[in-house]
Image 1 (cartoon, one colour):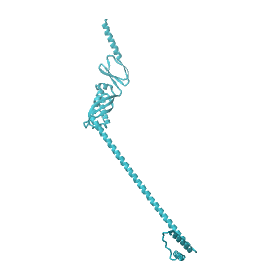
Image 2 (tube, one colour):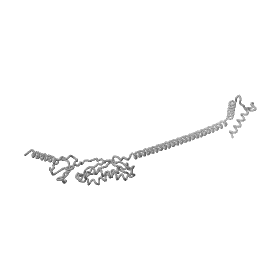
Image 3 (cartoon, rainbow, N blue to C red):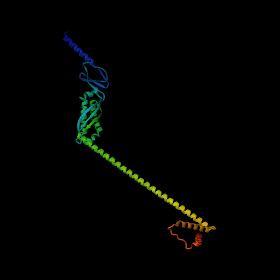
Image 4 (cartoon, one colour):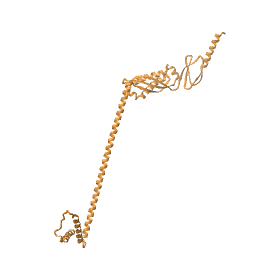
Length: 308
C-alpha cells in the first residue's frame, strides 16, 4: 500500500468521523431543528440530546422559537389627500410550527415584511394626513389581522405590530407646525378672554354685593334713627304729659296758684335778664308799679284755664 492509498483511506476515515460527530446534536432551549432523511422531511428535534443516522439524516433548518422583533424598513406612502409620508414599524412574531416555517414559505421574515409594507400602503391610502397620526392603533390592528391570516400557512403567529415613525415632507411639517402654533395662540386668546370675562363678572358681582350691603346698612341706619326719634318723641310726650299732670295737680292744692305765679315771675325775669344786652331792645310793661297785679292776673287767667 503506497502513500496515496493511505492518504485516501485516512481522508475517508476523517470524513466518517466528522459525520459521526455531526450525527450527535444537542439542541438548546427554545430552538427547533428540522431533520431530513434522504432529502425528505423526517422529524423536528426540540431541546435536548439527539443522535442521527450518519449519511442518512441531515439537519436542514434551525428555527428560533423565541419571540422576534423584525424591523420594517421605511417606505413612502401616499395618504388619501395625496400627501407623501414615510412610514416604518416593527413586527413582533413567534414561530409556532417549525416545519411550516421551513417549508411553507421561502423566508417567512422577509415575506412578513413585504406583506406589512403593502398593507401599510393600502391603509394609508384610505386616511387623510391628519388622521394618520390619530389612527395608529387602527393601522397596527389592520396589519396584525392581515399577517395573522397567513400565519397558519407560514407556521408563525404575529403578536403585534407597532408603527415607529410617520414622517411627512418638510413643507407639510412646517405647515403643520404653523397650524399648531396658530391653534395654540387661538386657545390662549380664548383662555385670556374667558379669564377677563370671569374677572369682570366677579368685579360686578362684588360691586353689586357692596352696593346691596351699603343700601341695607343705610336702610337699617335710617330705621334705627327713626325708631330712636320715635322713642324720643314718645318719651318727651310722656314726660310732658306727666309734667302737665303734675302742674295741674299742684295748682289745685292750697297755695298752688301763688306758687305758680311766683314760678312764672321767676321765669319771666330770667328770660328778661337773658336777652338784656347793651344793643338789645327790651319791651317793658307800661306801669312797672303794678307788676305784681299784672303777674297775678296772668296767674289767675292761667289758673282759670287750668280749672277749665
